[in-house]
Length: 82
Image (cartoon, rainbow, N blue to C red):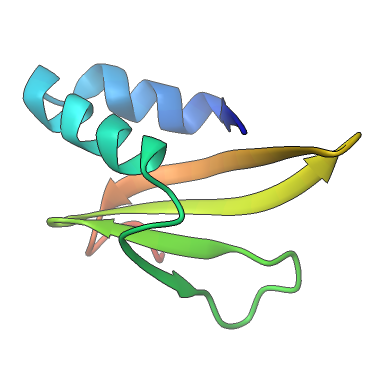
């Protein structure tokens, strides 16, 4: 399994405190475990992972038999869905 981050997700991880960033990365590495739900209104299979007050928007892809998790965006609960 390979994890790819969008530019926005990497900027968020660089901006937050180091312990918060580490908690988020640990939760991403544990996927598909955790509080994961499919997002409504999107046809590309987007899902969200809840980590405390933060949400990680991601989707699964398969490329040449390799499972890829593409992290689309990371943000606080109130701002990520806008």
